[in-house]
Image (tube, rainbow, N blue to C red; front, side, top):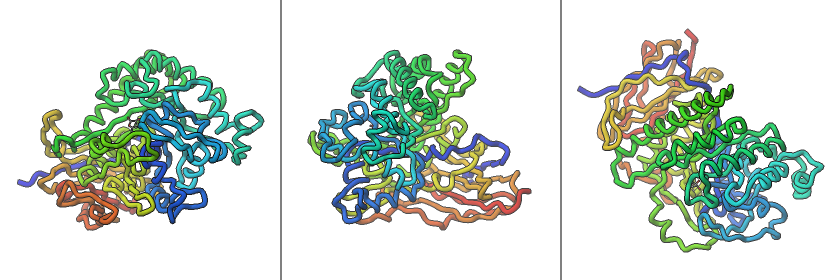
Amino acid sequence: MVASAKMIVDKDFIIGEVDKRIYGSFIEHLGRAVYGGIYEPDHPLADEQGFRTDVLELVRSLQTPIIRYPGGNFVSGYDWKDGIGTKESRKKRLELAWRTIEPNQVGLNEFADWCNKAGADVMWAVNLGTQGPDDARSIVEYSNHPGGTYWSDLRAQHGYQQPHAIKTWCLGNEMDGPWQIGHKTAEEYGRIACETAKVMKWVDPSIELVVCGSSSRGMATFPEWEATVLEHTYPHVDYISLHTYYGNKQNDTAAFLARSLQMDDFIRSVIATCDYMKAKKRSKKTMMLSFDEWNVWYHSNEADSQIEPWQVAPPQLEDVYNHEDALLVGCMLISLLKHADRVKMACMAQLVNVIAPIMTQNGGKAWKQTIFYPFQHVSVFGRGQALVPLIQSPKYDTKEITDVPYLEAIAVHNEADAELTVFAVNRDTDNALPLQVDLRSFGMCRVIEHIVLEHSDLKATNTADAPDRVKPHRGGNAAIADRVVSATLPKASWNVIRLKLESSH
Ligand code: AHR
């Protein structure tokens, strides 16, 4: 008997409204993300500001609404003032987080311009490693205050009369990590984050703040870190961050594809810790989550250990992603949607060249990595209400996780466009999985398209010379009869089944 899976989708079983900011991304001053990635004045396709238009076009096609910047580990040693004023006057600095030279040719104003061109908002991280409340309040004043003060007038002198109106700010980066410049204990960080949050919001009460949670679920201080940090900051912040990266160093694909269940568990634990603190504080506010670094990261580890220090924009963290990575990325996106009620922002880390969906050659081409596709599909079609995925699926066990469903899936209902989209991964690398989706509460529907990302080689990659080796096709076999969608999910595949809702009953 062929194993099959079932899913019930009911329009009244709503997890939550999908906040489009869960399709955020991240650009750090690291490797070739900025220099050679988004910015390369000598490139034949550079615009008048030196931004690569080929890269901008790819970024726009992802419809990513918010981009975290300028780090990452980089931010904990960064002086934001090095990145403003005339480009000729900007200092070159030793960058200690990634052991490079930072030329500071892109800073706050240029990045805000680039984000405008990309159709995204800036999410700015302040330095709480070597700096503190004073620099944080000054940058909010420089960026957001209308005028008539030292910092806001300086912005105008720099050519930016209008404030950038940056709404979302991160209070440092991964401050729990011993690798972080200015690493702190939870007590130390909680106190400085609280005082920094207060002065930033006094400068601009309309901003929202993200406090640092743990840099992974595997940290020894997790989840005590979250509890202590929130003890200090709960009334002053709006989100707590989560970060996670997975790899397949053991070459165990079944275990690798199961990792998103650990992401689910991580999210659930952080929600529990937030809600404990809500009760303890007798607070009316529910803390939301910002999963502001997530991805696959391991392919480049060995190459990175060979890179000579103190270069400008060396090729760091340039993971070349394969087909199985795209499947896990699809599962991770489904994890975010499964928690749409509490995860309100998320950033795939990162966007260009550095563990990224977009790769470039200096002076040459730009192309899409395998992971580009699930991210683009969910960002474009995953807008609306995430619906509870009631799933029956055959399961398997790995060394670390038991009862891993072969089917990972969720549906998003876009009422405004009268569309329902099912996102589904078949984790089974040997067999196709027949799927039935019961749409009991929906009226007449038709299948718009069934997009499939599949490949006979799990390790297949896209390169500058073969950019389309792994790419989706529209030949999936989803069909609908009596309000039940039937589809075959090919082995090891990512699927997007788009349905048009033609009547409400
Ligand atoms: O995204 C790469 C790095 O991963 C970031 O700089 C850091 O925050 C995390 O450890």
